Length: 154
Image 1 (tube, one colour):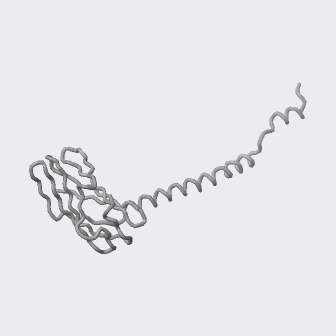
Image 2 (cartoon, rainbow, N blue to C red):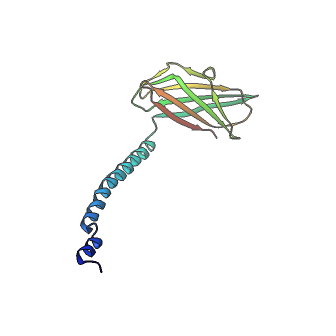
Image 3 (cartoon, rainbow, N blue to C red):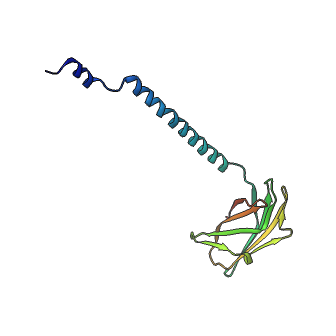
Protein backbone atom coordinates (compact mmCIF):
# COMPACT_ATOMS: atom_id res chain seq x y z
CA UNK A 1 0.00 0.00 0.00
CA UNK A 2 1.16 3.52 -0.81
CA UNK A 3 1.94 5.71 2.11
CA UNK A 4 -0.23 8.71 2.90
CA UNK A 5 2.68 11.10 2.18
CA UNK A 6 3.36 9.74 -1.32
CA UNK A 7 -0.36 9.76 -2.22
CA UNK A 8 -0.71 13.42 -1.26
CA UNK A 9 2.30 14.33 -3.43
CA UNK A 10 0.79 12.52 -6.42
CA UNK A 11 -2.52 14.38 -6.11
CA UNK A 12 -1.00 17.78 -5.70
CA UNK A 13 -0.65 19.91 -8.84
CA UNK A 14 -0.80 23.52 -9.89
CA UNK A 15 -3.02 25.58 -7.71
CA UNK A 16 -6.27 26.91 -9.18
CA UNK A 17 -5.22 30.41 -8.18
CA UNK A 18 -1.99 30.14 -10.20
CA UNK A 19 -3.93 28.98 -13.28
CA UNK A 20 -6.37 31.89 -13.04
CA UNK A 21 -3.53 34.40 -12.63
CA UNK A 22 -1.73 32.93 -15.65
CA UNK A 23 -4.89 33.22 -17.79
CA UNK A 24 -5.37 36.82 -16.75
CA UNK A 25 -1.72 37.58 -17.50
CA UNK A 26 -2.22 36.27 -21.06
CA UNK A 27 -5.70 37.74 -21.62
CA UNK A 28 -4.83 41.36 -20.80
CA UNK A 29 -2.10 41.82 -23.47
CA UNK A 30 -4.21 39.99 -26.04
CA UNK A 31 -7.14 42.30 -25.28
CA UNK A 32 -4.99 45.41 -25.75
CA UNK A 33 -3.54 44.06 -28.99
CA UNK A 34 -6.99 43.37 -30.44
CA UNK A 35 -8.21 46.80 -29.33
CA UNK A 36 -5.28 48.53 -31.05
CA UNK A 37 -5.84 46.55 -34.25
CA UNK A 38 -9.57 47.39 -34.29
CA UNK A 39 -8.79 51.07 -33.73
CA UNK A 40 -6.35 51.10 -36.64
CA UNK A 41 -8.95 49.46 -38.88
CA UNK A 42 -11.51 52.10 -37.90
CA UNK A 43 -9.01 54.87 -38.74
CA UNK A 44 -8.37 53.32 -42.16
CA UNK A 45 -12.10 53.30 -42.94
CA UNK A 46 -12.40 56.93 -41.86
CA UNK A 47 -9.68 58.00 -44.30
CA UNK A 48 -11.50 56.34 -47.20
CA UNK A 49 -14.74 58.13 -46.48
CA UNK A 50 -13.41 61.68 -46.42
CA UNK A 51 -14.52 64.35 -48.86
CA UNK A 52 -12.77 64.37 -52.22
CA UNK A 53 -9.57 66.38 -52.40
CA UNK A 54 -9.86 66.91 -56.14
CA UNK A 55 -13.10 67.26 -58.05
CA UNK A 56 -13.22 66.49 -61.77
CA UNK A 57 -16.12 67.61 -63.95
CA UNK A 58 -16.69 66.81 -67.60
CA UNK A 59 -16.92 69.94 -69.74
CA UNK A 60 -17.28 68.19 -73.09
CA UNK A 61 -16.62 64.89 -74.80
CA UNK A 62 -16.23 64.18 -78.50
CA UNK A 63 -16.07 60.84 -80.29
CA UNK A 64 -14.72 60.98 -83.82
CA UNK A 65 -13.63 58.17 -86.09
CA UNK A 66 -11.35 56.22 -83.73
CA UNK A 67 -10.76 59.36 -81.67
CA UNK A 68 -11.80 60.30 -78.14
CA UNK A 69 -11.38 63.86 -76.86
CA UNK A 70 -12.54 64.92 -73.39
CA UNK A 71 -12.26 68.33 -71.77
CA UNK A 72 -12.24 68.06 -67.98
CA UNK A 73 -12.33 70.78 -65.31
CA UNK A 74 -10.23 70.00 -62.23
CA UNK A 75 -10.94 71.77 -58.91
CA UNK A 76 -8.41 71.59 -56.07
CA UNK A 77 -10.29 71.12 -52.78
CA UNK A 78 -7.12 69.93 -51.05
CA UNK A 79 -4.89 72.01 -48.76
CA UNK A 80 -1.75 71.44 -50.83
CA UNK A 81 -0.71 72.55 -54.29
CA UNK A 82 -1.34 69.94 -56.99
CA UNK A 83 1.23 69.41 -59.72
CA UNK A 84 -0.66 68.89 -62.99
CA UNK A 85 2.53 67.88 -64.80
CA UNK A 86 2.33 64.60 -62.90
CA UNK A 87 -1.24 63.54 -63.79
CA UNK A 88 -2.03 59.95 -64.67
CA UNK A 89 -5.28 59.06 -66.43
CA UNK A 90 -6.73 55.65 -67.16
CA UNK A 91 -9.73 55.14 -69.42
CA UNK A 92 -12.13 52.33 -68.58
CA UNK A 93 -14.03 51.47 -71.73
CA UNK A 94 -17.62 50.24 -71.90
CA UNK A 95 -16.37 46.74 -72.75
CA UNK A 96 -14.24 46.67 -69.56
CA UNK A 97 -10.88 47.26 -71.20
CA UNK A 98 -8.53 49.76 -69.53
CA UNK A 99 -6.18 52.11 -71.36
CA UNK A 100 -3.54 54.07 -69.47
CA UNK A 101 -2.88 57.36 -71.23
CA UNK A 102 0.70 58.46 -71.66
CA UNK A 103 1.88 62.03 -71.06
CA UNK A 104 1.51 62.98 -74.72
CA UNK A 105 -2.25 62.31 -74.51
CA UNK A 106 -2.84 64.61 -71.52
CA UNK A 107 -2.79 68.38 -72.11
CA UNK A 108 -3.03 70.92 -69.32
CA UNK A 109 -4.42 74.29 -70.37
CA UNK A 110 -2.91 77.09 -68.34
CA UNK A 111 -0.81 76.87 -65.19
CA UNK A 112 0.36 73.39 -64.20
CA UNK A 113 0.57 74.28 -60.50
CA UNK A 114 -2.96 74.15 -59.10
CA UNK A 115 -3.29 76.08 -55.83
CA UNK A 116 -5.97 75.21 -53.24
CA UNK A 117 -9.41 76.48 -54.27
CA UNK A 118 -8.41 77.02 -57.90
CA UNK A 119 -9.38 75.12 -61.03
CA UNK A 120 -7.71 74.09 -64.27
CA UNK A 121 -8.68 72.47 -67.55
CA UNK A 122 -7.25 69.21 -68.85
CA UNK A 123 -7.76 67.82 -72.36
CA UNK A 124 -7.49 64.06 -72.88
CA UNK A 125 -6.92 62.61 -76.33
CA UNK A 126 -6.96 58.90 -77.25
CA UNK A 127 -7.22 56.80 -80.37
CA UNK A 128 -10.04 54.42 -79.49
CA UNK A 129 -13.21 53.22 -81.17
CA UNK A 130 -15.11 52.11 -78.04
CA UNK A 131 -17.07 54.43 -75.73
CA UNK A 132 -15.43 55.45 -72.46
CA UNK A 133 -17.37 54.57 -69.31
CA UNK A 134 -15.05 56.00 -66.64
CA UNK A 135 -11.88 58.06 -66.39
CA UNK A 136 -9.70 57.42 -63.34
CA UNK A 137 -7.21 60.16 -62.48
CA UNK A 138 -4.23 60.15 -60.14
CA UNK A 139 -2.91 63.53 -59.13
CA UNK A 140 0.13 64.32 -56.97
CA UNK A 141 0.43 67.21 -54.57
CA UNK A 142 3.63 69.12 -53.82
CA UNK A 143 4.46 66.67 -51.00
CA UNK A 144 4.21 63.62 -53.28
CA UNK A 145 0.86 62.36 -51.97
CA UNK A 146 -1.26 60.54 -54.56
CA UNK A 147 -4.78 61.92 -54.84
CA UNK A 148 -7.27 59.79 -56.78
CA UNK A 149 -10.33 61.11 -58.61
CA UNK A 150 -12.91 59.39 -60.79
CA UNK A 151 -15.18 60.68 -63.51
CA UNK A 152 -18.06 58.58 -64.82
CA UNK A 153 -19.31 59.38 -68.33
CA UNK A 154 -22.91 58.89 -69.46
